[in-house]
Every structure is written in structure tokens, then in C-alpha cells.
Image (cartoon, rainbow, N blue to C red; front, side, top):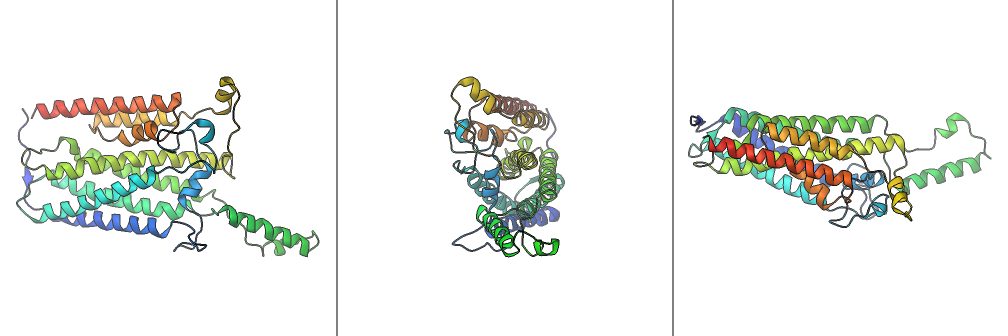
Length: 343
């Protein structure tokens, strides 16, 4: 039997951290709203016309989310492939849940009737997640730097043609500089990936510090209900986001203009050669399964295996990664139950 954990009745730093978490959610939601891309022929509030969804659509992989339960591999790649609703679903849930968590933690830190277990660790973890949310907000405009819609790129090419005609095919260096041209993403995309990795690291640190799934909840269940799912699913989804962003960066350097739609194969052998699925999901599944088992945190691998099982093509690599992530969840559940039985 473990001795009962000490608790605090009030905690100023936790209250401040809770407010900070709610503000960070508001900043992220505002950034998402201001960077939706072109609408009704007008650029968004940041002066850009391309959206993150349109950019990600150009660099889809065998593990990128698509429609629920309907993603044959040969129609999954290319800009004409159907968009996935998973991003809207996940970010709507996370922003609402984390905002409620921030307000609850402020309420719990102020009123002594609510017992606060692991208050010091919880206050720091909340602050780390707030910083991670701000980094996610910074990632959105950063990943769009140097990217333009297909219409803007076509307009650029048309201006080049007009320049050639005007100068009869002879252009000096200075005259070419008069033509605005799409920028490259050689620096912005790796930097965006680095920002996202840092956000993921902070959210993982928060999960390790709180170990929220082992929080006492017999006398005070509120903190457990808000913190455990919110912090864990946030960190788990950021792992998926890092995986997708890494694939985007790799695709950009191998095919800057985007991954083209694949031809329809005639045989199974041709399908296997045309569409070699990536092993990246398996790597992330192993990492998440190990971390979830060690913390323990059953919800950490959930975003990965849920995304692969519901929204990704059913190929061996994706199904294997989902199975590994599910094993990590099962081991974490058994460890949590074992720790609770020893209380």
C-alpha cells in the first residue's frame, strides 16, 4: 500500500498557469481562424491565399489521413484526393477540452474546497502545454512561408511569358528581378518541423511530470478527468503532427512541386512497386508505445492508432503501426491498474 499523497488547498502558480493555458488556446484558435487561406477571392488576415490543408494535400503519403474507412492507396495521393475531416475534429476537441482544463485549474487553485494533488508538477506541466500551444500557433504561418496557391503560381508563370515577349526573349538580370516569383521553402519547412518537435517535447514533458492517469480520484475526480485525457491526447496528436510534418519536409525536398497522383495499377505486383508505403508510422508507433508504457499513459498512442485505423489506407505498414500503438496502450492500461491497486 502506498501512503496517501499530500495535497494543497490553494496554489497561486497553478491558477496563473491555468489562465495561461486558456489564453494560449485562444491565441491558437485565433491564429487558425486568421490563416484559413483564400475565401471569396480574398486573401486571409495574414495576406496569404494558400491554406495549411492545401499545402499538406500536395505532399500526401501512404499514412496521411483521408476519408474515414475509404482510402484505397491508388486514389489517396495527389491534390485531387478527398480532404480528411480528422484535423477539424481533433483540433476542435483539443481546443475546447484544453480551454475547459485551463478554467478548471484556475477554479481549483483558487477555491480551497478542491484538493490539489501534485500541484507543483501540475502547474509546471500546464505552463509547458501553454507554451506548446503557442508554438503550434507559430507553426501555422511558418509552414506557409514561400508557399502559394496553384493559381498564384500560374499567374507567376504568365508574367514570365509576358516578360519574355516584351523583351523579345532577352532579359537582363535586373529585369527578371522585377517579376515577383514564388519563394522557396528550404529554410521555413525545416524550421517549422523544429518548432513542432519542440512543442511535442514540451507536451511529453508535461505528461511525464504529472503522470495524470495515476492521480488520486476517489475524493477529487475533477482534476483527473480534465488533465489526464487532455494532456495525453494533446501530446499524442502532436506526435502524429510531427510525423505528418516530417513527411511533408521529405516530400518537398524530393518533389518540390508536390506528390503527383499515381497511375492505376493493373496487377498486385505492380501495385506493390508503384505504391511503396512508408515505415515512418511504425517508428513513431514504437516510440509512443515505449513512452506510454514507461510513464504510464494509456491515451498517448490513441491519436496515432485511431488515425491509422480510421483515416489511413489499410496497408501492412499502417496496420502494423496501429497494432504496435495498441499494444502500447494495453501495456500502459495494465501498469495504471497495477499502480492503482497498490494504493
